[in-house]
Image (cartoon, helix red, strand yellow):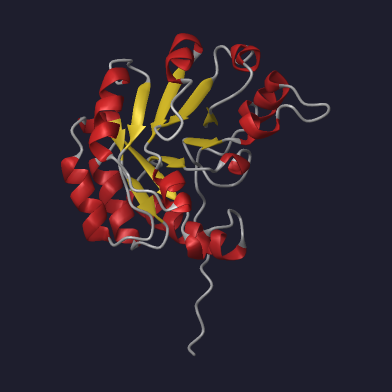
Length: 226
């Protein structure tokens, strides 16, 4: 599992302490993008959809495409393809068709969408992001785990080796049972200033927690009729 530490991280001395780590930069707060490309192993470019959804602001996808184009020449940089939270699959698929940067991007499967869409995306893309939705907002809640068990059971039945899934805002899954390929969060950016914390100490703790390589199929609890 690769851990992408969200930015912005302040002060500059704090982010420089993290040289050699992997970083996530949102289009909604891009001020660290040049710096992390100087010091990071891999950079994930986030489309800012979650920030826009929380704030109610409109997205500027053409601006995002142009911004990504400046950085995707780096071989280890990749981008989250635009998505709209709480929208239908037709709108999501339309955004996939508009994406101009090929497999340097990763589509988003939202957990309230049909699992067959996740299977299709994994067949077509080398990396797929997973996004929580209102129904599955709390990572590792009973509802979240039930849905993710369903998804991993289906993926394991089709693939000898698990496709690369990236859990958006999923750093707390580090060391847990789900074989995600990568995760991100802004935990370090928000909390490194707390007592007994340092940027390096937090990064060491997260980066040292790995997930299992394989998924063992789990029994599914049937929903009772109403």
